[in-house]
Image (cartoon, rainbow, N blue to C red):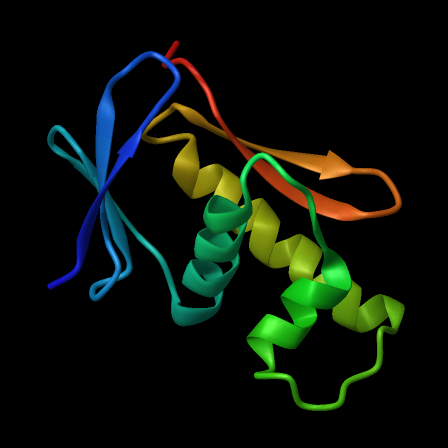
Length: 111
């Protein structure tokens, strides 16, 4: 099992279980689908740098050829919306939309 500690801005730690695609903080566990996990983990690895929608599409479809149509980029937007909702349960993470680019993950203080 690959457990990675993620230290948030306030010094608290969230355990990232890459094998089970979960984040654990105290008694709260957040599970992700395979696609959600790929997006979350990519944003985490690149934080605080923005990741383009095209990069995220490539990640989801394993570099297969795809069109960057509005329907495909909307798929990314929907997944990111679900991820944001799930992350709100444990606090300390914020996904920002970077206009004209894509998304970025920021580690924040718990509120």
